Image (cartoon, rainbow, N blue to C red):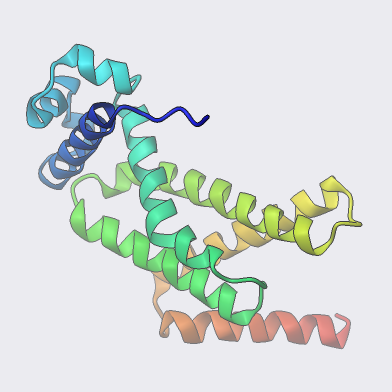
Length: 188
């Protein structure tokens, strides 16, 4: 029998997370206190600590849920990893960063290391799971190496594009994929 979580717990957790998101739109992350979050969520500090260890734990949970909801759900619908999947992931990373940057301008720079860690971790898990299904004869280290290389390179390319914005993101990633294919097909 599945143990269901009390809806009141879920509502309180959502209240805290939503209050935090709203505060990050108005204040710099470093200036937000637990008291600010609790007050905005209309809960006391003890209730906050029943749900989260500190504001960094809250930040990680908010970002993880956002990444899962806004990016990985869309990506997980792909049965195969092909050019379309790579383009979808690449543009999703950019859209997510742009959205967070626009919504939380004051705190965006403070969030970027956590966003990067979460994206890499979640993408690595996605690619690892996919590779295990496709290549059941490969050993775990080869699968994990593939997953790390693909997730980190995709994230890195997206960040490079964000800093330079030379073409449309779809065109940029298509050109990068074309260059990679050319290198492999020419043997050098």
